Amino acid sequence: MTSEASAESTGKRVKRSFWKSLLIIFDSKVGTVGVVVVLFWLGIAFLSLFWTPYNPNSSDFIQNLGPNKTNWLGTDHMGRDILSRLMEGTQVILLKTRIPGSEFSLPGGVAIWGVFCSLVVGAILGLNAGYRRGWWDQVIMQVLDALIAFPQIVLYLVVIAALGQGDLVVILAITITGSPGVARPARRLALDIQTRDYIRAAETRAESVWYIMIREILPNARGPLLVDSMLRVGYAIFMIGTLGFLGIGLPPPDPDWGNMVNEARKYIFVNQLAVMWPALAIATLVIGLNLFADGLREELNRYQK
Image 1 (cartoon, rainbow, N blue to C red):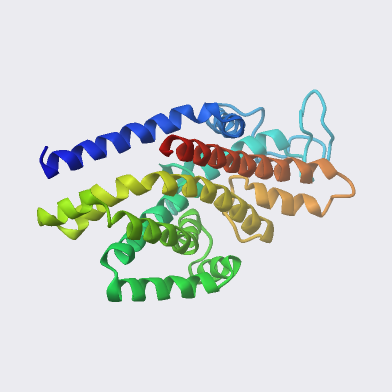
Image 2 (spheres, rainbow, N blue to C red):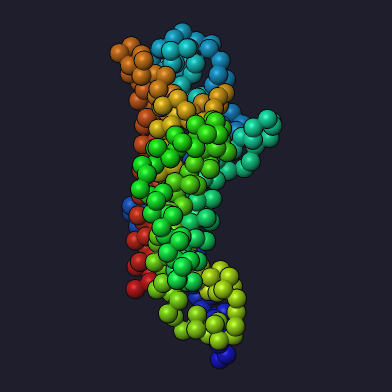
């Protein structure tokens, strides 16, 4: 078998094992619970595209009502239906990204795009640092270490203060703060994988550096990177909620879970449930993503043994 055929065969085996590991995640009880929670919120998000009980931004009811037959989760301090606002809030996080000055939205929520961009940027930086080594490694890692030294919330505040509020600005902030965390494991994986025989075979064939990184190293590193990205979606959602609580997160008119908590806290002694529902939504979605990532890691490790 030629070295090229061997490399192709290795890539096919990695692809099969990758998709098989995704399917057998249901063998993990932890992973199954996580999948169910995430699918629940995705279902709510898709449902809200076509239906919500009421207009989430209309003050049609008595203020600070508890759960009742008309408003299943009650109303907030402005008489808006909390369930409708919770459902609408899932869209910006998971399903759509609003473009400033346009009525159109990009498919995919702010958290999804933010983590995707940080995964792409971090993987490119990490693979270059790990495979090229030398001054590439030193420069890239020193810059990333400098970013890691800053508290994430400070970097978020700096980016938003410089560029203003907006979905794309939050995505940029997530990318800047998340890329160093992706680059480190990507570099570590590249340092390990570059010693393999199929990498030597590709170098013998005089393949380009980018070909080796994208076609040979990345397919063998994507399992751990995928698990890490699942965790980072949870971190991004939590940070979006934190920014919303501080009043500098996603701009109106669409509801923001963090901002719902911020608005309701002023009336916490009158309507405690108005604070609890959005906080519970953030917590369950983040925990579900973490459980999904833990189950995926468990099955990937078990399959590789």
